[in-house]
Image (cartoon, rainbow, N blue to C red; front, side):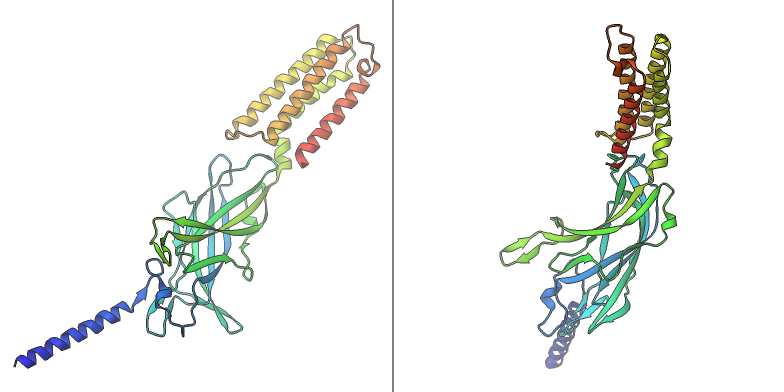
Length: 353
């Protein structure tokens, strides 16, 4: 009888041990474990796992420098040699789903969908390729570069961080599958789409699981891929729209060279009126732009016009001085030509350089 109980106990213990061992061989998540520890020499999987990525942009909007963000809706495409699971020769199931996290988002209510399946899309020689699709839309932080405004080019950055140490997985931009903007007409008026570029950098994550090495544990290091969507502003129309008042002020001031020198008060009044108009337009332009600690092209244009109007005033004063005998000053033709050429050349330099 005792032998029977002993036998039953041994059987229960054996079954429990087998069950526990079988449980141990279930899915090992790359985020919390080190899957390379469970790979044998006969397994074909190689770590770090190299994955590629591309994006397809559906929509870009809220492209205004009054806010510090833009809206993007896009598909993500991650390409890997493996499906979602890899079973080792010693029967361990390793989760190889390539998970990436978007960075820089403004809104926590992000809709980011990565289905737990992969599409087998092609076979490259003896290597099969799986696509792991996803969808992402959100408001994304962006610091607007207004140095060349209104002829600026903005590089909208969208980043994705691999949720695994570089000993497990690394990412790079796909050369075979190009990142594209699906519909260029979806870009709001006033912008030209120039293309998408990408680069990869590495980021240390002290809060992640420590990684064992021969010299002890180290912090996890993850790879981050950055996509830059290049948009160029159609600045010529905006240029004339913003600075019409400034140009009009210059023209009013320029008219002094077509008025006889004996009408000094009329000429000086026109010039001073031009100054007030130019300064007023400068405040108008500054009121519609955010405060920036740089000198923009818009500032240069306003300052140029104010400088030329001041030069016109000085010329009118010199022409009224009886001591001045220089013909290049007294003859209105020469100051008019000099002022016009200076105005055109400096504007062209500011616009195109």
